[in-house]
Image 1 (cartoon, rainbow, N blue to C red):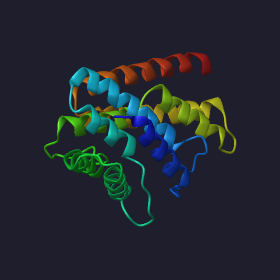
Image 2 (image 1 turned 60 degrees about the vertical axis):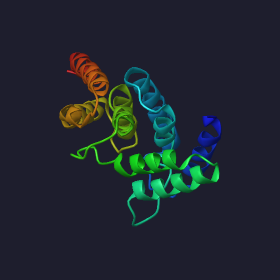
Image 3 (image 1 turned 90 degrees about the vertical axis):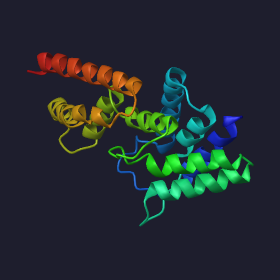
Length: 196
C-alpha cells in the first residue's frame, strides 16, 4: 500500500483543524508522524498487520469537532476516507475500532495486538527527550522564564509520567518507556549539578 497518499491527507486535515493548541511549537501533524514511525518500529519487533497499524497511527488524531470526543470524530473521518480510497471493509473496521479505543490508555478491554502497538506508539511520542524539549519551550513562552522554572517543570513531568508505564500494553513499549524515564532521570541529575 502507498502510505504517501494517506500522509498527504493527514497533513491537509491537520492543517485545516480548529483543534485548540496553546503551544505554537506543537504540531499535530509532526506528532502523528512520530507516532507512525514508532508504530512501525514496534510492529517490526512484535508483528501484527502492518497496514492496520500504519493506517491507525496515521489517522488516529485526524479529526476535531467542538463538543465531541476527538477519537470519535477521527474514527468517522478515517472510515470515510479509507472507504473513498477503496480499502477493504475489514481493514476499515479494524482501523476505526483502534482509533476509537486509542485514547483510553487505562482501558481494561481485551485489545488486538495492532491496537496495543498504536496505543504504545502514541504514549511513547511525548515521553523522553521530546518531553524535556516541550517543557523547556513551554517555559520559554512564560513570563519570567528561567532555567530553574524549566528544571522544576521537567521534574514535575518526570514525577507524573514515571508511573504511567503501567499504561504500556506491550513489553517492547515498556522497555522503551523505561529507557526514556532513565534518560530523563539522568538529565535531571546532571541539570541539578549544573544549576545548584
